[in-house]
Image (cartoon, rainbow, N blue to C red):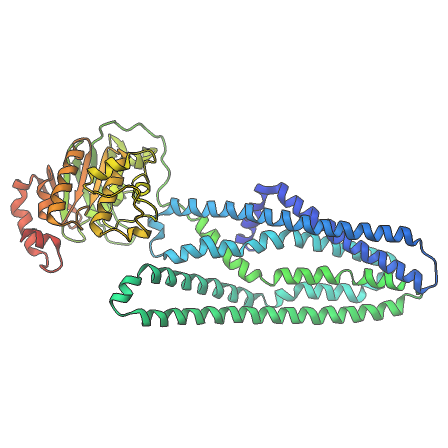
Length: 563
């Protein structure tokens, strides 16, 4: 069995009672159907041979078996889907936990639409495995064995035709398994790619319209849709071929069984019963073949989910945790880091300090290592060498780092909902109105900001993000281009508010505006992954002027601020 399928089958173990109920109901229903068929065949045989039969007893038995089969079918439908949705809910939780565990480092290069496909489409595909496959396979095997044993008790020769052909029916999906695996992979990949492009299109509709790219985008989506349609058609064609082969084998087996019954059974009274028992293996065999027909699609979906869920965390969980000081300093000690083992060293022994109650600006040309320092402070990665301490405690020994360190990112993401809900993201009971006022944003906290904050300007989104960070009360604040989208007046007002807030925090400031850098208590200048100089603005003014003068005039906000 494929490891991913085996892993998913093991997920049923957490809901053993629901699985056993599914198995029992399915088995009871199938045995009741077989029992009704056997009883009916016995009655027909008695009538054909002119023998009498206790019709009242037979009617009661048939009625009871039909009632049992009906109730079992209803019960099986309920409990099987209940089991499926319990397991799917568990899988969705595991996928969510996996994304939270491996983000952001191990999500680099993965598109949001691809993740959406894993969370939604792939997991929904697995519903077939839990609701319609596992218990049904066990039941089909049990009924096949029971019918075969009963037929053999009448005459072993009855199975000479039906049993080998039933085995052939079961193995039909194996004949085309390579095509099934290929089609399953193509189908899941095409679905994920189209989903990713649709998500990109919806999110970038404004840009597509502005750059007159809507027609080209429609053509791209049409091409991806055709690719998905081809994958679906190929998968359906293979499934149709398997169904046709199964039907042919079942028909041949039925005809052969009828001939064998006519040859072996001499008593007219026993012929119908012998025919039903001999053919009882064909129905379960056909059911197994039908269940296995979609194995390729199930395997592909299972592998995608399994790969995501079992992906290792980029950083290990905290160990031997210690308490962080209430008024923490932040210290970088000889920090070295490279993103890949064979890649260039991005940080080369970086050391600096952010005292509590002070603001330190980290400046440097693009690629100097500023954003990497922020990522390491947030523990998206761990340094290859050296260490980072918050309140005297190394990051791997802090139990809840983000309770102590919060960030206002350059790329602000707001969720669909109100401004208050976005501000309270990290502090559900915070006073959103007060935080918004501190961030110099005069809007109603109940204002619906829309998906990704579409109803707000860039500057307003930035200030909501500032309010969100301040509302957490974290003693370490990282401002990564927090004022980049503000005009001069609003920047000055927000800077004053942040300066007041920084009195109770250790603040790391990354900015490309000279006016913002001037307000820092201390400046650290990075060059090529090293600390080239540090000091106050007055002490570094010459170095900063030289840095700004080298920046491309049209590309750098630094150059604009210097002018």
